[in-house]
Length: 251
Image 1 (cartoon, helix red, strand yellow):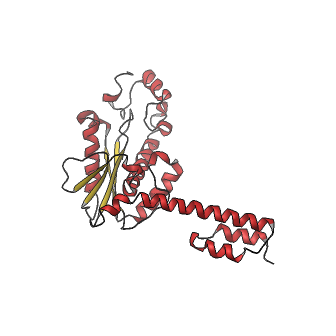
Image 2 (spheres, rainbow, N blue to C red):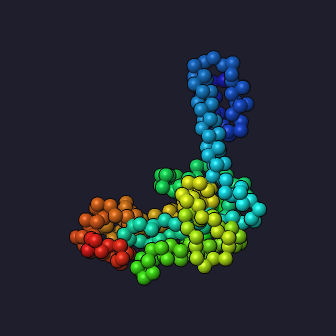
Image 3 (tube, rainbow, N blue to C red):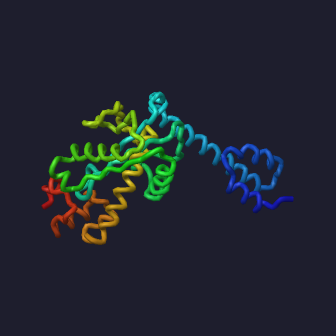
């Protein structure tokens, strides 16, 4: 008789589509250990199907505009921090592409974002990143800087998109048809994917400059106004990546 440890090992590498056959193969095995393994497999499949349903719901806009050849999701991160750039992501996914666990980047852990970012960039037809500096933010204001970052991201796509799905904005100066979706990073797989790669890009940058400006702990707060960051700002004053137009209440 096959050992329970061998059956457990098989279950660990089981593809979702093979679950029913696996359950059928061991349904008559009454050993408590096997019964537990089969129950865990059922729960895992239920969780997988629920995630598939969630992802299908995030393709509503992509399916609505399916006749467009290249649909691009666009989102930004970093509008609110006291320091660092604003970063925009633009992603064109293949038709019918489903990347499980993609979600609004704020709802994911750093590890999940890192892993998903790699998968998104690997599977995307094209992706682009736009970065606008703190100096430019101070010069033209954060809204205009956000638009500039988004235009940069779109300009780096090859091939070019013919439809833009945007998180809550209409971007001036672009020729493509645009669809403004409120809370789009929770409703569109393309926008959520753009949100993830933008967030990972910005976080990596803030971590990279943390050693240069250790007093502000940018690796932890990513430039946002945490209590410790504000206290450091009051004590040491701004560094070169602080947004002067954002910190008037503290210095």
